[in-house]
Image (cartoon, rainbow, N blue to C red; front, side):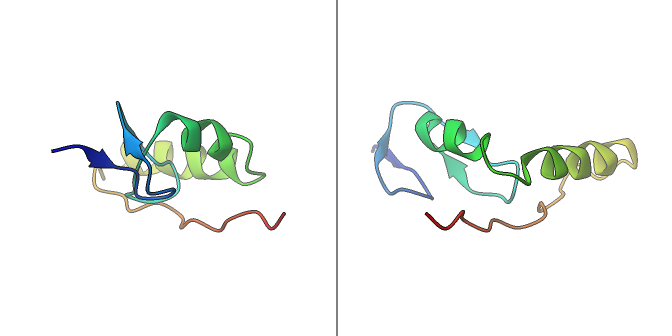
Length: 67
């Protein structure tokens, strides 16, 4: 069964987890996510939690950019 992107609902050939939450997203959505103004904040928060031993961090939450 094909996997569907949690963010755009397209069929995925491959996927990666969002830095903002636990969504499994396609690579197109990942590229868009990397352009979000809070992306580095999300990466830093994830890295800080990993240093504390929390490997189940749910992220800082996804807030789409209004276009």
